[in-house]
Image 1 (spheres, rainbow, N blue to C red):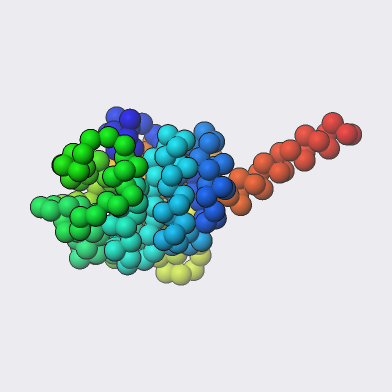
Image 2 (cartoon, rainbow, N blue to C red):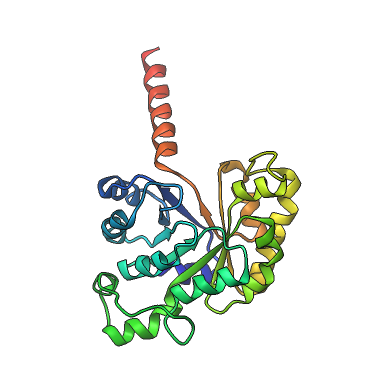
Length: 256
């Protein structure tokens, strides 16, 4: 099943989050138990060439590929889809105008203005012909508009109503900075949790999916109860650190 089909079935999915622009590292991550893998171009080290090369090992592992593009790089959203990504996350979508520009890059006409040329994506898709690709792509791909600011929160209804926007992705770190007027960054800030829950509720009422980044595993269940169905976590540094700590603890316990 595709990412979109699994979300439509109301599954709660977990995507790993890759910032290391190396296909061998991504291959190892893709072989772990995550439901999907996200290549981060905004704050991670991924770039156009690494996205092109890292999609193949993720697909070989049978996992959906998600790409987060840099702020305002809606042109890269089209590129990521042409490379074979199933979904794209666009950060700092703060207005209906931003949402429309993002949707235009994500969807072929008549919904958007995506240019034809799936040079790598279509061969990697591995089935059908170019007409099937054209006919199915708008319905198969997912556009996640990130909600991270008070301006985005104010514009949320309009963003959700924008044709071609399939989902929202709440960035709780930036949202906490906006919520406290720059006083703190705290992804689990209790004071904003009612609003965080309302964002997911409004998205689902609009027939859209809701995703969120998880920095503390203990709060993941709470986010799922709110209605978030795609949970992102597990950067390379985090996974290596946790794995090393667990391995060393077991070794030292055995040694005594």
